[in-house]
Length: 297
Image (cartoon, rainbow, N blue to C red):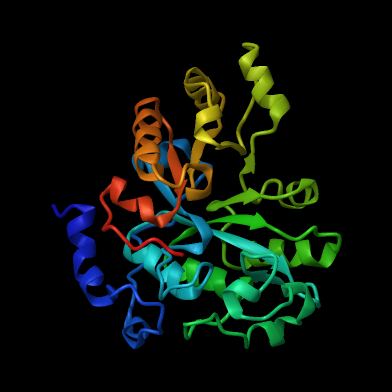
């Protein structure tokens, strides 16, 4: 049987770039194959069979020619056989959910404005710099994820004072039948609106109950956060009470000089302690038998 690395190599050779931040026409020809099955994050046995599950931070596999939270980044996540992608969600002027990371659009698109300054129709016409990729609505992106059997972690960036915004997110999760393959990062209102349709991050009060030795039902939740703050002895009881354990291996959480060694050390010790999976920046995917990619700058 081929390893994950071997199965990815034909795609890797096709879209590997020379590292320059210029549009690459070959990317447009990439056709990612769907994963064999959509993950069910509510079923611990199915998650266990795929351990460690990998969630691509900032919308997929990101490189100099592939912007974060773009459709191409999502396609590359499927090529590299990630289980899920993290999608950053912001609210348009007309209250539609849009997939975009930054608070301001200057760095990504050269426009000194926010997603909230545009209607969905207008913002969908805006391209990322040095790329043919355009900003994408959550509707279009979830359709792509469903077609590739990629689960989603939704990071709600907007303050979300408008109920219509959340109703539309919920309707899209149901439209694409992703309620069993969805996790949530977001504020209190997002948690209230999407409870039962997405796994929620484990609240501090529930974690404190586990620390105190109490028996508590944690089904519908996952433990998420910074690895260095995690008491490893809590992983097993948290899992026994029904929650998943998903640490984050993100570049910004580590030192600039030694981040790769530090992340590799965290990945090893957390895997040994039984973590169910990781949300990772793609520059660390070679730790999990995926081809190494360029660091996005």
